[in-house]
Length: 363
Image (cartoon, rainbow, N blue to C red; front, side, top):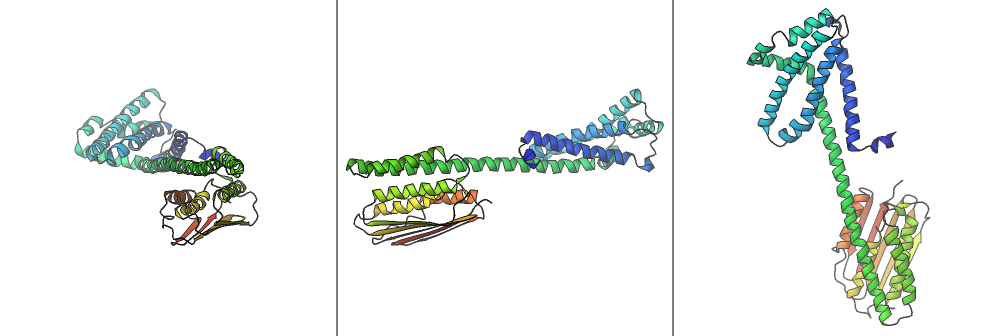
């Protein structure tokens, strides 16, 4: 049931909200007008219908016009004028409704006297009297205070729903933008490596093509989902590291280990890769003869994954890892997808970089 409610469109949800509020308000008016001291000896629905009709008019005027378009935008004069119009509209509504009810409905004597005494007898004189309008305002508030409070509550709910919808749209757009930054950057770097091997007629080129095909299949066809199996993400990292072993000189050693049981865990796609890929990218500035060692350790838990990366190099490298745009984009994706459920620690020096990333996965 809860899933069905959350799947409703904003318009349908707003309509259901109004229906629920009107049902509550109708019950309130029936209970109010059936009090013993009112001494109505017949049905009270004609009076309830009049009160409900104006309550609906008041609600829509406040929620969709006066509050959002005038009051909250600083047009206090228009908001005040709208309130005055509603005051006079209430009197006209009750006057016309009482006359029609008296003419066409079988009202009880007490109901007939009540409608005539409150809304018909002094109608014209009250319209032109400031004191009369003050009395009408007090009487109107006594009847319509509950729907006024409902109007402000409903407006707050409408605004909150719109805010949440805008927030979800913003998150989707930002995530799409961040993901569009990841895929092309990775593919261009890998194709550049393949180009270098094919130009030198390296025998490792066919193997690199196979790994590249697997990587492209994953990035192009499997990463559109919000979550992917953790197993596929780890296979992606395996292929990536295999490519790096092929393209790097013998002076660069790569260590990779995965501990823990990989079962049905799910992870946001391409979330771990930028931290690893930019670690290798930092070696592009090092001399080909410089010794370097990279270690990638993954620890898998039933509801968490922890990635530890280290890079040591004999040559001093620029301190660009933490400021890299790809790292910044990856950290924003973490904040959007796993707020309060992740931690990232980066230590960067000229000869060493250490990264520790832990993500609490979805249950």
